Image (cartoon, rainbow, N blue to C red; front, side, top):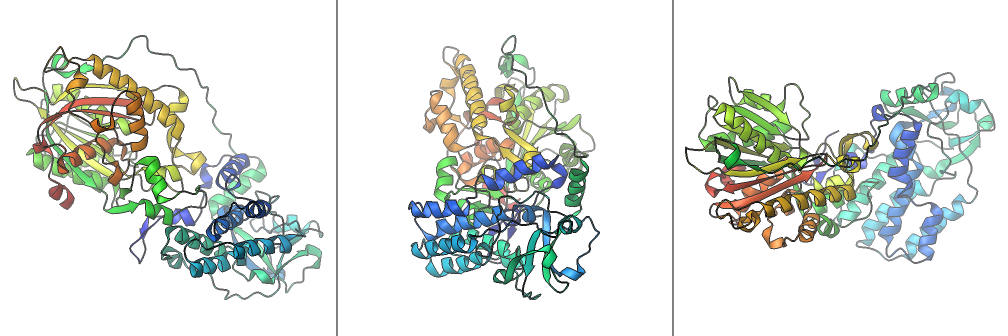
Length: 627
């Protein structure tokens, strides 16, 4: 499924948010599936009793709020068919009796269903509109056609429905009969759902939900009844379920046979501090060849995804949040996504950088690609870029995975390699998160796509280095090491962020890096601290709200920090060079300055670079945008 699409209204849409899917090849057991189901549905969906109780207590301020809970309840009731089965109405006489891949519901009647569900409808009618009465009533009617037709308990539904032989083994089993079935019962096509349009973002998301839930019941809900298997006649219409794909059937077969694989378990050792600190690397004293920055170029994603767009695409498993609340929580107003390939994004930045630096393919001694989102393993992205640039041979071309500390790691390696090759090193930082997020709300709020490329060359004899100090670190408690995971089988192999753990590792490393910078002497005046001679701090653009808080805890005021995360989101390894580029474009950097650039993130990695930036090395925005 595409990570995003543009509908006919020109709005960005995330199909995975309204067409729930699971990668069953990642699931190890029924317990694993049940854990995913509980996470996505049980923890968010209220029961009908809870909906009525909330109404009686006055907790619903508007029709929208009760409708949202109704939709969540239907998602919960349909939690297994949504993920596993396709429902088809068929004559009972035509149902195969001996196949193990056709399933039918075994239901428990709910005597109070009509009364309780009717009370929910009355509650909706009594509440005031949220925004638009006509739109809200239209969505409610569609939603209630599904919500109000249930006549069975949903809480005791089994993970795997019984097969037809299992159902008919007891004639007293209860199943669903459709009294009058119209094979032309209308359903919504994919493009209709994609092109759904409401003036209010929250209503657009709810409208899509109602369309998807409507399609789960391709019959008139008022024409259904519960019936004993013994009372079914050949011409009666029943509902049979078929696995959505081969992986679902394989999973069911493995569950039934007891052959599901065991989840891997690990021993979690308490971390032991290093026997001695890792000192900062002073480039002037450690290396004979001074590194010079000859070019910084960037490539942005071509599609803007605003916080309003996120709300229009609210997934069934997201907690309620407004566009303004996303901004307050993250400091992000929009992020950029690329509709092109990951490789093209990287290559665009690389081409601009070497052109601006005035170096040809025969001059480049190494290519280092810093990324944590590459799906390319053979050949590596760095070797692919080398070939695309027409480089006949390098000393080394390789990918470096250091997540949000990618740029400091990459520049450190470039400086070391420079001593051997004595010719320019191309460092490319690139990430494409838009196709690795799925329905995970924290990740969707934060991450964007982007690329930046830097050319690091040998400085002239006696010339001061542009890269002055660097250091890098990794590891820590396993809770921090695993604070950001991709692929994560517990979240359908999408990237997931465990916020409190990320904040802990970021705070730990930021304090350590600042302590080092404070203790180092300034290259311009040994009596002064290096921190005192930092003109601008450009941190990894992780989460503006979080970083400002952590910096304040470490004694740094917000006015010393530069952010562009508001417009581009968190682009991991590319975030610092993208921010440096924008600082030049916005006129924050107008002359050569000394920058402290700390990065920190997944894998409990961190690193920093103290470097001098001349705005002349930054490729002009118009040139970069054209690329």
